[in-house]
Amino acid sequence: MEQATVSGTEPDAADSGEAIRLESVTKRFGEFTAVDAIDLSIPRGEFFSLLGPSGCGKTTTLRMLAGFEIPTEGRILLEGDPVEDVPPYRRNVNMVFQSYALFGHLDVADNVAFGLKRRKVPKDEISRRVDEALELVSLGSRAKSRPSELSGGQRQRVALARALVNRPAVLLLDEPLGALDLKLRRQMQVELKQIQREVGITFVYVTHDQEEALSMSDRVAVMSEGRIAQCGPPEEVYEHPTEEFVAGFIGISNMIEGVVDAPGSVKIGTGMRIPAPIPGDCDPGDTVQLSVRPEKIAVDDEIESGMVEMTGTVVSRIYHGVNTQITVELGQGAHLVALEQATYTASADDRWEEGMKVRLGWHPENCLVLR
Ligand SMILES: Nc1ncnc2c1ncn2[C@@H]1O[C@H](COP(=O)(O)OP(=O)(O)OP(=O)(O)O)[C@@H](O)[C@H]1O
Ligand SMILES: [Mg+2]
View: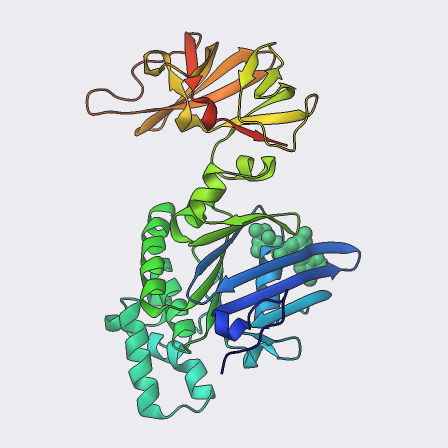
């Protein structure tokens, strides 16, 4: 029989494969609003990240999903069911913390087995599932080690195995790689993503590291002051930020203030008129920010026909090996940052010096107009 749907309502969450749904979820601590009327829908199997600066409400959102905090307003549904009356231990979710929180007196296998033992799962099943989980995180050979004998990355893998062994519908990860050094962190990012693909569990991943969020996620929600500023695939939030906060938080972004001058043109402080794709809801006289990503800026002989061009003076140069970042002063306090890639013939550092006059250019469509 065909299922009846009421016009104007969404299909049943269980049918649509929705793992998580937040409806206008707000959390206040006294007068302070930590999470401000958030709406979210996360399909099953997605790697979803909450990205934002310290204090924007990421952990609070995760803790509400886990059941450690109760929303002040709004509804949370897990796999289609409202969970306001479901205590944390009855929710089909597990949380992984930055601090690992392993039991020091238990070996690796017993740490991973802990939850299953408490739930009185039969012994042979526990042993099989623990072996599987340890294989998954490449720690099969360390089952008898104590946490104190492991490196930071290995400990975090034990914490991950301990969560995965319960086969939760959703895994909540709060800055799980935050304690690791950069190189290990990058390596663990790749591993975590592979593991997530393999097990197909929905991951909600909290981080303030934009590179981490962009490289691992199917979708990213950029949070600011308790609200979701933008939510979409990594390419979308990077290439098409909808507001100044998002453009500024993700990647290096060049912002030049200007005033909409005529259709298709913005006048900046130097008096120059810059052609740019003005959104339909902007009127002449509106103040806007022009944003061009550094890698979209061509310098001197890289400039092509059809580009917007301006000249300026190099005021700083930072050598990064693979590229060199130059900051160019345009006058009237406006600056632009450009990135020059190293090539197989030249080091990125070869061409620029402070005080040099340079020409900068970009294609008008690569200039975002933000309010
Ligand atoms: N139990 C609490 N009582 C009062 N205020 C709280 C409580 N928990 C969180 N807050 C406040 O809510 C805001 C959001 O906190 P939250 O821990 O969610 O931030 P976050 O995005 O995880 O930050 P970080 O990146 O630093 O971990 C902060 O201003 C914090 O001080
Ligand atoms: Mg936090």
